[in-house]
Length: 89
Image (cartoon, rainbow, N blue to C red; front, top):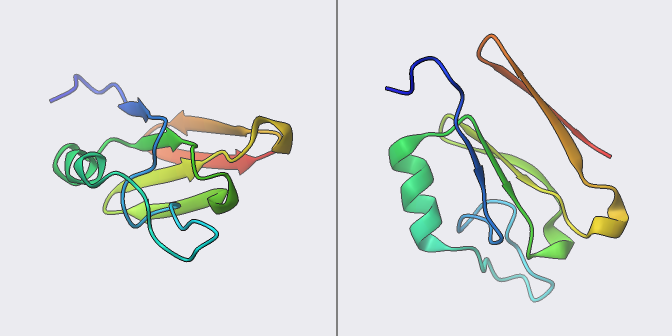
């Protein structure tokens, strides 16, 4: 129980299988982070590392956002009344 407060995870690496496909075509995300996200179900996960996989995906109840390179503009998320809205800039 989080007392009604949303949980946001910020990680350098993405979770395995979500916004983690490298130029080689391989999924190179972190399997331990994926297990954590699947068990805790944060509302939002921000990550980077795999610059070519910029975007967002759903992992269970969590939204995962790979912001890509800083030069690509980043992302903004709004969490309000249980709803998560993400905009890639």
